Length: 139
Image (tube, rainbow, N blue to C red):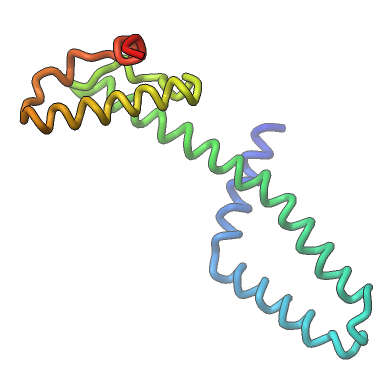
């Protein structure tokens, strides 16, 4: 089931982002609007477009979220590989995406503060000495 959903999400995302799809959607809206006088702008006429757009929006939310989750996981794996492969990179940063929002904010704030201090000192020697744990322990 997951493989089928991923396949559908990938194909739908690719299709939804295509200019032809946008053109088709615009055409549907124009045809719908043009038929307004024919149907005397009835409640049923309005319900058709409302129902159609609601269904499409509802389904697209799940497909877009699936695509974003897969893209984010792939990006994270690539970044983790870079951290692992670069000699002076701090491998302790691998997996910090699993920390809480508050912990990540503490790490980010500490890194920004540390970067400001380094900029003031014009020295980068200590950047490889700090770890995520030590940065979190400071707070």
